[in-house]
Length: 334
Picture: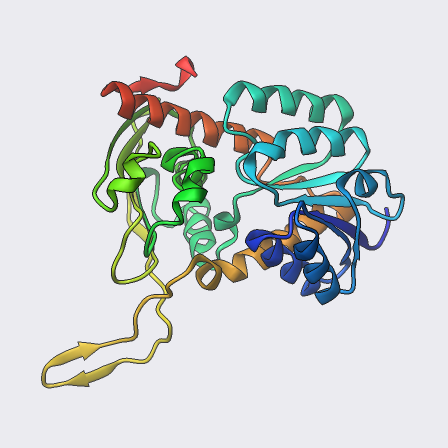
């Protein structure tokens, strides 16, 4: 196997910049070329990292590029995965693979047919705190998992223009939490109950989309996961998980801007929460890239896989139908 990995980055937007920085900080991997529909964005990011600007087709055909990072808008992901697989590239793709479940299945069939390496970007699995909770479960520290609680609330909603293309709260925002629920439960949910509302901004309802949701997942053995989502948290970026087991509990609390506290006669005060996902989850992006390198160069099985991406989208689709139809949805319907 080669001892280094050359990357073509497809997409120079916000998440593309995050991955470019993580690539730059990771051994045995380098950014060779950048493609973007906006030439100035590609040029700026390529210049910052000593890379070239090439078209997507040029990157796919380049012999000096081993792998691609797909960080384009979601509606391009599945087509680019298939193109890269047929070009013999190793593939990292941001979530979700597509907004349509059948389209994801068709895409994964091409990945399997070509034997391509595909890793999907559910970065929260690599958060040191969340990973420590999973490790405690694996070690048997809290016995058998019985209930999982996930709180995921943004400080404020993204622009309406983003929401119009996002696929909705369940497929765009909550899909991270569906993956985390699977990661912690250790079993596949078989039923989904979801309710959603517009409590933050009436304009979101005109998209149409929701901005607040409560979701319950149940596995065949009866394990339960509860997810709370909101597009508004006035106190900062609220990211917490808790796992109740038969002999104990494991949890990961929010991360504050610092660990400093002030104590007076009036009580204890501490700094606010980190206010943006880039601050909160930057270490996870670095660990994610390092895992992709290990898969591409050392033969370590990639994780999360394309199937992980599919299963999270199945749960998102089930949640969408549950909220729309006001009923519990079995995942075997999807």
